[in-house]
Length: 204
Ligand code: TYD
Image (cartoon, rainbow, N blue to C red; front, side, top):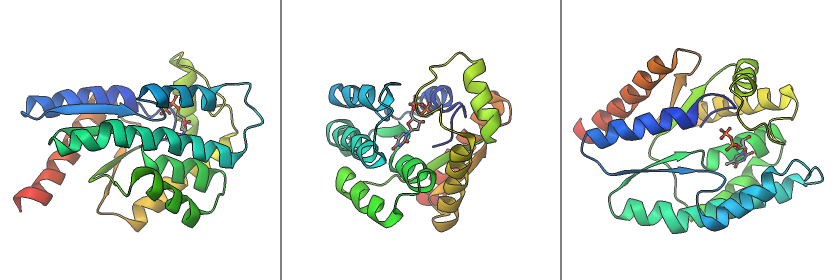
């Protein structure tokens, strides 16, 4: 998880490779999207001219894409013992639609539980970066600048503090990674977080 421009996608690729090298099968998924149906839903969410989109519609679309990827990809792979790394999951909806747009968190959690069938991550890594720095990186990097990026800075600040709230309520599931460091250091910190998790959950 993480705000815009925190470098998630690139870090996830390298992290997946690292876990593979330890002898595990790994798949990575991306939200919204990651399935044929999910990618179609993603296009509707991201279209710049869909400015009329109601926040409730947006939530249901994110959750529709997520329901599909959970059923089609995440659950079947977990059942085979494969490690799944997801670029964003339910916490993105809580951060963006809940803390960002101010929608009721209790209701959102119910919708999320329905969409995911109650599937929650074992470990969630937050790539934490200053909002302005993240947005700058994104435009400087020439990445796609979408409708959601264009929203005002305060929105992204609420998203960031939302993530921090979630970390406080469930500290055992989260690990905050300082994503303002050099990418190679961020990768080392992510790997360390995974090793700490495995040690804590399986070896102690
Ligand atoms: P994307 O282009 O995938 O960017 P990123 O690299 O930031 O993941 O855009 C996803 C956007 O959708 C991003 O602004 C976060 C937002 N989002 C939500 O608002 N709610 C959600 O549930 C999800 C999954 C994403």
